Length: 129
Ligand SMILES: [Zn+2]
Image 1 (tube, rainbow, N blue to C red):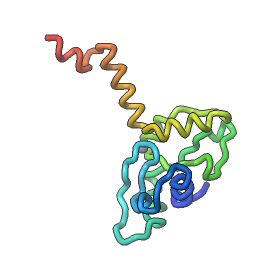
Image 2 (image 1 turned 30 degrees about the horizontal axis):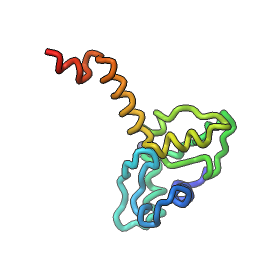
Image 3 (image 1 turned 120 degrees about the vertical axis):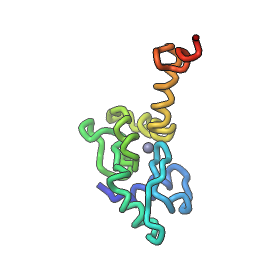
Image 4 (image 1 turned 30 degrees about the vertical axis):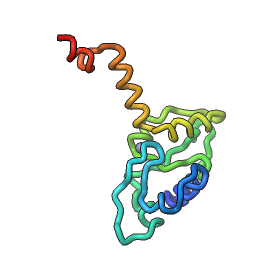
């Protein structure tokens, strides 16, 4: 698979990020910035983020997704774990999941369902008394 820097530059171009936006390695889903060496060039910063930033397939490999930059995007481990499985004809839906906030969107939706259900432990239960 391509190195993180290659993926970052590919997706920055497709999603309208500037070169300045790539100075700090970040998750393309939730936007979380990764630690980096201050004096290192951007390419080194991105490639050294491996382990914290993961190379996530938009279309799953076992569904026929390829290992090229058009199908692999840098995500934090939480976004990568929470990302649903997308099939061979769902690349656009996968990219939408990522660009609509990744794990942050997932967690906010889950929280909204807890609130709406009035489940014990949700905010509705603490305001009833
Ligand atoms: Zn993320």
